[in-house]
Length: 82
Image 1 (cartoon, rainbow, N blue to C red):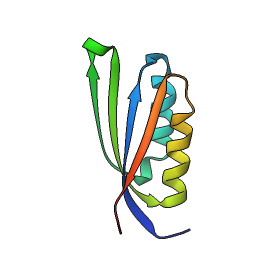
Image 2: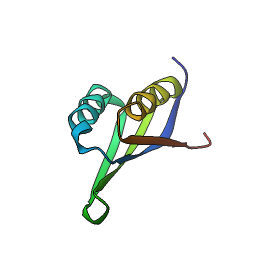
Image 3: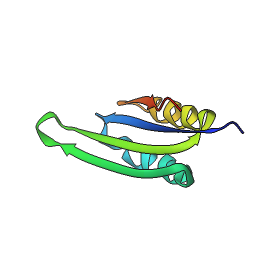
Image 4: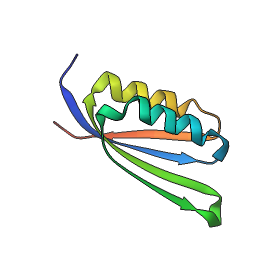
C-alpha cells in the first residue's frame, strides 16, 4: 500500500434512507477513521457529515466513491499536502 494521507471527506445526505448504508461503509473502514462529526440540518432536510481519515490514497478514494454512489448522497474529499 502507498503512504498514508490525511483527508477530510465531506458528505451531504439528502436521502436519509441511505443512512444505514453510509454507517455500514464507515464501520467497514473504521480502522482509518480518526474522527467523525454529523450535523442534521432540519430546515433543509439534509444531514452533513465530516469524516477525518488517515489512510492510503486508494482507500480514501474508494470510500469516497462508494459513499458518493449512494442515491441522494454527495461526497467530496480534501487532502492534506503531505
